[in-house]
Structure formats: structure tokens, C-alpha cells
View 1 (spheres, rainbow, N blue to C red):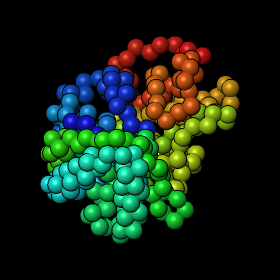
View 2: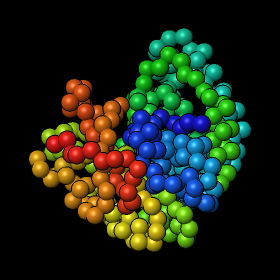
View 3: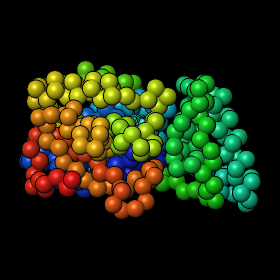
Length: 303
Ligand SMILES: C[S@@+](CC[C@H](N)C(=O)[O-])C[C@H]1O[C@@H](n2cnc3c(N)ncnc32)[C@H](O)[C@@H]1O
């Protein structure tokens, strides 16, 4: 089972690092609730649901409305997705020139933007645009219209089997849409594991990283709000893991070490699709913050 969308900040490449840093004895926990307030494409969600059978419930959330509508439709009516999407994919793949494919893309984008948000057809177009737009980005203009250009694909594929697997996995999942603080109200007593993957904080003032997922943006006061919630829910016994870019306030001061003082901070080297770093030594690191001891033996800081 894998994500059914391409998503900026997707964590497929971080799965091993996350798995190695789960709480000691995680698989012996009973009746676990897995919570992901910034689920995006769900790389970690699908990994956790397929790998850890003791997860009996999950709560997922994202601020992106169309994304969460797609999760809900797959949960309730996967046939609607599969039938409609099969048709769109076959129509696109029949086209024989770059210009006809480009035209098809922009006509679909226009149609998508003209449909009301609650129209089921819009979800299909959302998935189609995600497959065919540049890098699977989701970006809207000031008027709320999706405006990502065509990704110049010659043909696209569609994994129907995966949609049905996702459908099955989503049966025990509560799907929410909104700001992350909404999610915490749904957390009950018990064995809760919360994985938090908010938008990346820019790495440093001279590094021009892609961080804009939503028109509202995600600012330092949002990082602070999130940390305050982590403190509250950590005290209630939730085990929490947070990932982000290894961001610095100045040459010496790590933003997340300062914000999450008292938590455990670890670093993993990653490659990201959307970044401006090519040289290996300039590749960004991801910070992994936990409110519990991880099984990984900690390396000394590299810098
Ligand atoms: C780094 S991405 C998560 C990627 C995800 N872990 C994956 O593997 O695809 C961050 C997500 O946070 C969402 N987001 C941005 N602001 C938010 C907010 N205030 N509340 C909830 N979600 C938000 C974005 O829509 C985006 O999907």
C-alpha cells in the first residue's frame, strides 16, 4: 500500500528512519491509536497501518480540503474513484502529441476550478491534476484557483489495486480537515502515538526553500502553537514524534533545538525533490524530535 497522490514533503524516503525511532516495545502496545495531524500523501500513515497490526484506530487530518475529500471518497466509495479515474487516464493516454496532452491538462484544470468544492467530480479532477501537473504540487492563486502548470507527461498509470487497499486500510480511520489543533480534541486516553510532519521551516535566511503548502503559510507562531500542544498531550502520556527541516536561527542556533528544549533531537540526512541543493554536503538534514527515548544510539552532533 502506498500514497495515492504525489505530495510535497512526502516522507517515503524517511520511513526507515522513522521506523527505527519508534518507542521501544511499540509492537507490544495494545489497541494503539495512530494520530497524524499533517497527513499529506500519507506515506507514514500507510506504512504504519500495514506494518503495525496493533494500530486499531487512526485519526488523520490536513488543511487541504480536496486532499481530505479524496481520502473520504476512497474510504466510502472506491469504485467511484476507480471508474472515473480509469476513464480519465485512458483518455489522456490516447493522445498522441504534446500539444493535445497539454490542452487536455489545461481544460481539466479549468473545469476543476469551475466546479463547486462539494462536487464529487472535482475530486477525480484533483487526482488527475495531481498525476499530471508539475511535480505533484498543489498551489492556488489569490482567487483560490489551482494554478500549477502541466508536468509534460507522455502517459500516466493508475494503480487500481492500491486504491482498494487504501480503502480497506481507511475503514478504521477518522478523517478530519482543518487546522491541526482541531485533531487534538479527538485524542482519547489510551496508547496514542502521534506523528507530526508540519510544513518545513526554511533552513536559513539565505536558503530559498519551498515551504508554501497552503495560501495561509505556516509561521513560527504556528510552530509554537504546535509545540504547546505537544507539551500538553505529552503530559497526558501520548508518545510524539515530530519531523522538520534542520532549520537555524543564526550560524549557531538550531531553531528546533531551542523550541523543543527538553525533547530528544536526532538528525537524518535526506534528499528532497523540491529543493535547491545538489551538492551532497549541502543536502539538508531532517530533524526528528521525540518526547521519548528512541532505540537509536545517538551520534554526536556533526557540526
Ligand atoms: C510536510 S507536508 C506532510 C507530508 C506527509 N507527511 C507525507 O508523507 O506526504 C505538510 C502538510 O501540512 C499541511 N498543512 C499546512 N498547514 C496546516 C495546518 N495549519 N494544519 C494542518 N495541516 C496543515 C499541508 O497541506 C501539507 O500536506
